[in-house]
Length: 264
Image 1: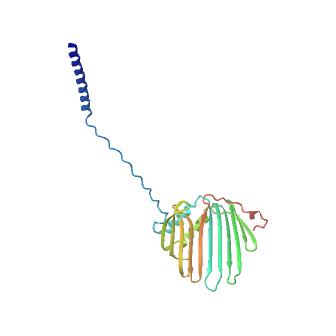
Image 2: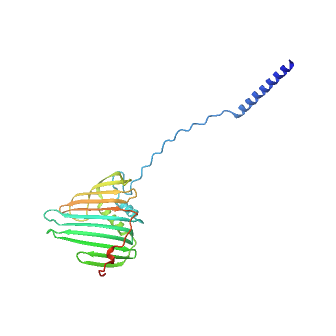
Image 3: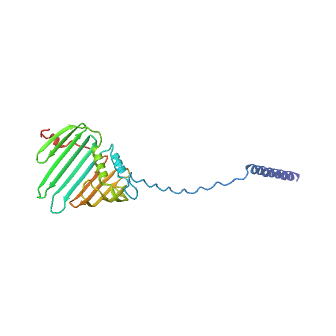
């Protein structure tokens, strides 16, 4: 059985060779350190948007900054501006003034302004005045009606949006108050800031007994709604404006331009 011994020796040699090669490879590779297992990243907390210019999370701080941002937000867009003014005498005098105005603005030189003013004196006599102004980009046309229709026209002489400047003017005049508070609200599906204030002044010598304002402001600084109400010893006054169809307003030529009324 000599061939069995020889075979056994051969198997041992082969086995020893395999073990030796494995040992040499392990020695060459060194110690392997397991890689750290990644952990799930914590979700980022959404950053809170900054309030509009001139506004803090607590109050209305700088009306000049807000009115400038409001005016800039209207630059290059179309919109419909609505205004309402009312004034009522206090005491035995029952006189009053009411004014409503709607302005469609397609550009600083193309717009349509419709205004109606109704006055009532202490004898309950009512007077109504209507004025419509249309600008087609080159010329403006105006129709006035206080019982007698008058028409005028001329060339557009300016390139700035006078209606954006007008509402900014009223913000500077009436939104400066002694006390105010800011609240974050959802308006028309978007974030907005509602500001309520009191303790303002008016450009008159009358003593103000009550004064309050309210603004609805978009993050860009556009004041979508504004109202002021105040009371003196002689009268109660309320003024408000609000915007509609921003970016979607078109100006249509009014029908009265086809009338045969003489033009001055």
